[in-house]
Length: 117
Image (tube, rainbow, N blue to C red; front, side, top):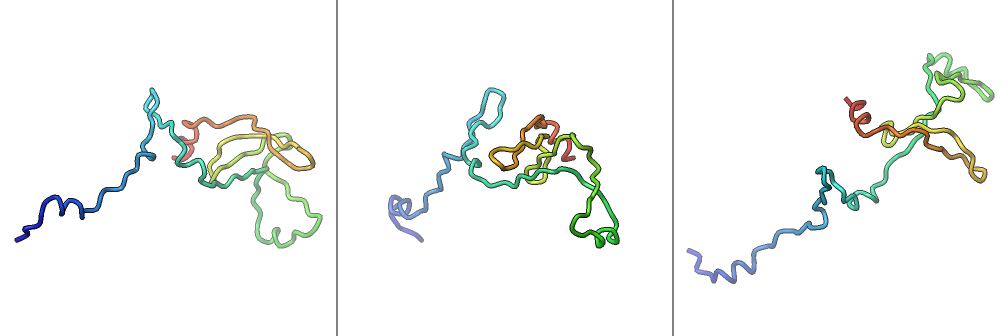
């Protein structure tokens, strides 16, 4: 039978972890507004000029100077992906001798969700 002092027992019990900073701040429509928790998470951003399919035979014949015809036409926008999910379309720009992309259309969140299914 345990005859310890209840106050002493309570003092030795571990206290639960506090995660106040992780509690979401909800907007008027019920969406999370506090994104501070994820703002420093790295993501992979990639741009796709176009795609094509070819047999391995043709792939092995490629060498310096070979041209690969893509399914996308010249002047069509690039696709911008974040972690493999299409989020926008854009066009190539040159900024101080470096390539960049100017976003011309951003895919809506509802459209992104629809494409996942």
